[in-house]
Structure formats: C-alpha cells, structure tokens
Image (cartoon, rainbow, N blue to C red; front, side, top):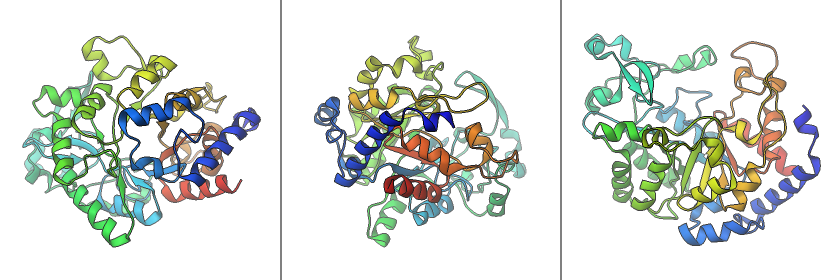
Length: 387
C-alpha cells in the first residue's frame, strides 16, 4: 500500500493531465509533452489518439471469461465495452496463413492432444532459445488446424472457463479483419484491434515471414493507413521497424523484464537489454519508428522481493517526453496475477483487490492497459475519472 500513499503530488499532476487528455480527446501535445508533436509529424498520430483514456484493451479478448483468442472471447470483450480488442497473436500455418494463437505451440490452448491423427506431430523445438515440446502451428495446414477446438489455457486459475472448451475453432487473421468490419457495422461504432507478430525472427528463418503477410492482408482490407483502427505490436523491435516500412499503421514495441533482451537482439548480437530501451535514449530510438510501447507493468511500478508494489519509475514521463504512448500489460483479477499487497486469500482462482491495483497503475499516467477483464477495467477507469 505504500506505493498508493506516496508520491501524491506527482501522481495528482499526472492524473489531472490524463483527465485533460481524456476530455479533449487529445494526445501528448495537450499533455505538454515536447516530443509528442514531433513524433506525430514523423509518423502520423492516426485515429488511435482519439481513443478513450486510459484505453481499455481486451487482452486476447475477454480471456478472463472465455478461452483466449476465440471469437467467443473477442465478441465478449466488445460486449463488455473494451475500447480495443487484442485480436490476435499472429502465428503462421504450414501453408502460410496467419492464425490467432498465444504461441505457435498449441498443446495448451487446443484439443490437439485428443486427436490421434496428429499424435506423431508432437515434437520438441527450440523457440527463442528455449526447448519447447508440443504441437506447432507451422506443422499444420490451415484445414488441419480448423479441425481443432480451443480450450482454456490456465484452468487452475479459471476453472469456469473450461465450460467453453471445444466450442470455438482457431480464427484466422483474415477472419478477424472481416469480423471487425461486421461488428463495426452492427454496432455503429468503429471496432479497434491490436494484433501482435509472435516470434517473427523464428518464423522468418522458417521462410514464413510475418510482416509481409500482415501487410498484405491489411492492404487487402484497406486497413494499412495511419488512421486505420489497427495498432500493431511486437516484442521484437526489428519486426516493428519492418512494419514501419510496409504499412502506415500505429506501431508499438512490447517490452518484457528489464534484464531481458528481445530475441532479435540476441540473434543480431545487439547487447542492449530492455533496461537500455527504457532509458531516454532508448525511447527516442523507439520513437523514430513507433508510436507507443507496451511495457510489462513491473516496468511502470516494480515489485519488492515479497511481490508488493514499490515506487513508480520515471518510464511514463520519459516515454511521454519522447512522444510515445504507454499501454502496459497485463491486469488480471485473480490473486496470483496481482501484486501481493492486493491479493485476498491464497486461492488460485479467487479474485483479489483488482480495483485497488488499477487505481495505483492509472495514477501513474499510463495511456491504457491490457486487461483480461475489460468490465473490471472499465469500472476502475470510471472510478478514476470521477476522482
């Protein structure tokens, strides 16, 4: 709770600035951030600046309530009111189609293990330096993947989601783009999506480059411009740099733990870590080709050895100064995923004080957040904006 009670003046200032931006529908320039206008001139602010703030992004849909990366999950995220839906994490099939799965290994998110015809496809591969055993999308044609059905990835935390195991198939990115248009028409309101290129260096080595496939589909559906309702993201900066040359969409670099290195950096011999990228010079470099960052929440407010929140870093102010927006990840309601000082009891599937945690994170001035529970995030935002 210490993080919630200290730095009150700085947080109050950030909160007032955020409220002003939300009311005016503006971006960093209204916040008085010197780098913001420059970044918009270089890359085009696009329609993403008009999204409500803090923006609520449905993480893999409404994955707190439905198996992730399914149309059931995406649809529910919209029904709950998410401003943007993360549809989806993009990985390729053997025949070059893009499908939506959290990882190319699908043993934990589909019923593939119950299909004896695919038993021989179980294998061990080295994925970004880690030996991973299971079934991989690149070993299946799209037609074969369509015979599978999605299941809950973390049943110990979300036993209620297992009710929906087997109900939905794996969506393709092209189906998502059509769904987006259909939902926009039905709802009379523009639906936004936030796809991610997954393990792009790994797939490029297999001859299954992601960026060109993403760009081709975005062009086909007229969604490759700076004001298009599609924000693209990746943990590999080189993937975002490549996309910057292919499409006009707003782009975001995802950032993991401070001591980690993006895998494309490892492959290229680039010694920089995430800790280097969140320094002002690293953020300026990112701002030369992207409009935002998606840092882990621990980069916004670190935790101590016991898992309690400590004091915020300067990342929000530093990123805003570079003209970048911040959409950190991921807020979940269940105890194990919350900071220790916001947990209630020890049950793995019980909810903790998610509203308290949202309040602390929103007070840092972040521009949005990925959440598995869009309804909780929206209520937390309403509380925050009311003051």
